[in-house]
Length: 306
Image (cartoon, rainbow, N blue to C red):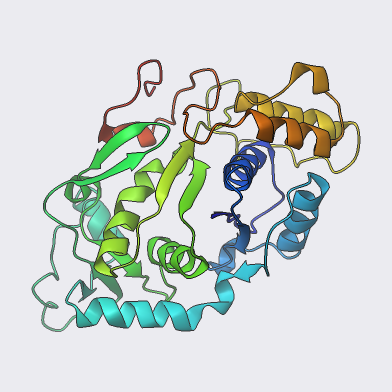
């Protein structure tokens, strides 16, 4: 069972489509369900009308989801229950430190409040105690990964100072509730996986498998995003069909004979080409983003980071 979980901060673009198509095909080829979640947990990043446009865009590209659309903004009770469980099992602690203080310490949390709040300082956030040993997990595209969370930032926030539940906890709680068994997303999120693996274990939840797809980059080598000038996905022909072909080509699943063909035909042909037991799917080797390259771990030959 898979899912696609965009943030409603603007229209979907080619990079979004690659992640959506990859997760959709890997779910469907094994007869699995494919769910849609809108990650609207952070109010300042939510753009009015963006989620509705994203839903219409997925439908225009033939990516139809199962069940109802889940909105993180409506999942507060589930997050609170998870926070209570983490606190009861001693995995979290209140923290009085500000972002500026952590930045002054070199960006890695120095453990100031691990043994208790400093006298006279109220709690601002809640942090999770990270393990002293590296976190290991398998990514089906990049191979075995080992992340030392103490070096990557130390004890991380699960509830922010503004009261909002942090992304790592929300996504773990939501994926577990949906029954997601395979998380397919862009390689720019590879570094975010270690904290999520720790949370799965702390909450005694079944760990999904991971597939981090090569990201789409600009001509300058930067990740394609709204910030780098990514164009919204076209919703009408012929741009729609050409863009889907480009997304499938990025994954090595495009059929040259179907360039410009209706989206349903292109998706059906791509589905027939997917072998869920074989990675990469046929794509040419592409580097993962520079930020994700800080993750320790082996990678299959020909797929080295920048």
